[in-house]
Length: 149
Image (cartoon, rainbow, N blue to C red):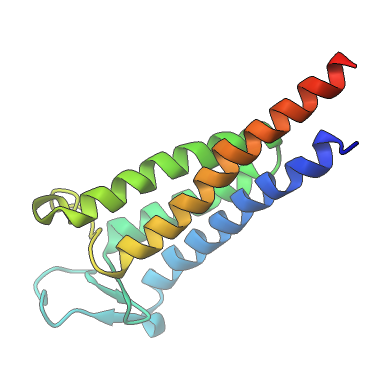
């Protein structure tokens, strides 16, 4: 019989991994060597591409840093990791949908959601959905069946 502690580990590490990824991407957006300014929007300060691939601006970088710190903090408890993964999946799933619609693909002018951000957000939202909803339900079932015996 598998304990809920060992099965909860992937859920917690998912929050940690997503947190580290978004913290690093957010910091990279402020690091000049990893940031390519956009020739299409020279008048917009801070708009460009991280590693020449992911469209970003200062607000987008700050969101990445905040989400990253939250994911790292959520790693400290199973319930925190589940909540992080669930909210992350919902918000970043919505960002994918907004990124696909032309008049909302900049979140109404605040931050870029278009281009390669769409597939990055879709993959990470899928990972968070799996660990936040599917895997956490397995943990709940395992803990409830072990407590009833």
